[in-house]
Length: 296
Image (tube, rainbow, N blue to C red; front, side, top):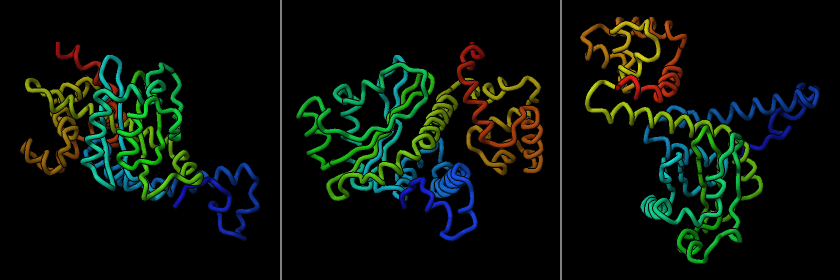
């Protein structure tokens, strides 16, 4: 299925909704397509912050267009280019080897890399179709395209704050090049995909911050930064939620009943003015920059 925002996909022929004004039809069509898109990507959203996201995202993209390989790269100020994730329908080993070489040194020959380096306050997602004429050297083309059968690529390039993101969707000789309809479908999801990857990256960074510490309990200190009114028990429950523990596991760890864990969680959520685990993660992600001063 290709997601193209057209009137025909929005309503059945002959339906009464055809009497809507043009602008109302367009808005309804957008809601219709967004709902279908979220259905297809539900598993991807549930995997945010976990290693499962790469494979699930590649699988979900197939509902829009055939995508053979996927790479997700991130660039932070003062740091080298980093691989956030990859997945392949063909050969993950080959893709991993190519991406390792690309990240290590060859990315500077990528014609898209200048866009990645460009400082801007805009959050616009640049969707760029591959153009072989823009490649800087024949050796680069042979190494990353010709020798491995890559015939097309669609890239998403955007910035969030000072962090730049670079997502590539590859096609090989068997699948052929992207059609215009496939490019349009993949362009439609650009903002959705960018927000998904941005949140995934932040969750991974939060997890690294929590699990890399060997001294104090970073998770508890992070929770404590959110609101001084949180009790010790409320902080202990929320910190374990951050670590991925479920209600039953938290109850065993704290030697209380599961219902007691739920009560502590509800009280803490009320104090923080949140209602979901996603909101808790968002608050903690925002608090990470303030963590170092609390540890001093």
